[in-house]
Amino acid sequence: MNLEEALYHYFGYQSFREGQKETIQAVLDGKDTLSMLATGTGKSICYQLPTYLLKKPTIIVSPLVSLMQDQVEQLKVNGEKRVIALNSFLSKQEKSDALKTLHKYVFIFLSPEMLVLPHVLRELKKLHIGLFVVDEAHCISQWGYDFRPDYMQLGEIRSQLNNPTTLALTATATEEVREDIKRCLLLEDCHEVITTVNRSNIGIFIEKHDSYVEKEERLIELVKTLQKPGIIYFSSKKTAEHIHDVMIQNGIES
Image (cartoon, rainbow, N blue to C red):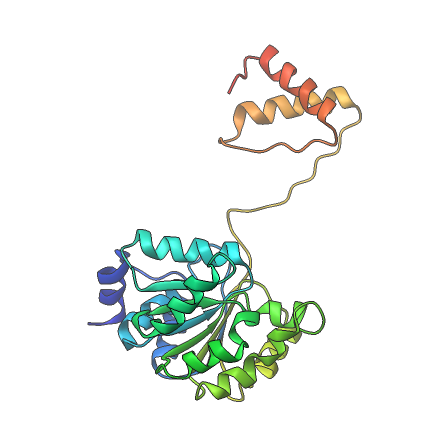
């Protein structure tokens, strides 16, 4: 099947979003790839689909436990049971059991700190890793030098795992940060997929008013006309409570 057929077969989508297909094709061609795809464009599919097509386990290095758990739960909701996150949510016994049965999993999520542990790395070396993914790859440059130094070891760890095809994913990274990512991961010949970070449905607009009364009147007008839902930020609880009362007085109750 072609990539569009595979996308529909595994995920039910009929077309790719910008940058997805090029990223997936590069990975399937065995090219180490750095992809900068805007938030909300489905970066996870860029490693999930190749994992199914390559039929080999994938390691996903993720910076946050909450992000890991969210991705794990999403995969499970979609019917994938061969997924595990090696993190602090597991007890010592659960981690030990998971490492003994690591060959049963297709998606293996862990943090840089967990990945560099000798006993974890020893078990991962026994697997035929198809894809090595670094999610939120800009963290290598932003955190690796001081806050989380284990990020700086990912290139060496990758080498110890026989240099599997590597995919670095991020939503935002300057050219300098992208060079840093490639250098730290030891990616000498890296294919890059760089899409715009511009989001056509997001904008910043500033209005200045001569008085607080005008500002309040304009706020009520916007609340009545803009598509819901929305969020209004205030500088104090007192102001928020006051505007709440004003909205009710103007017939805005939800």
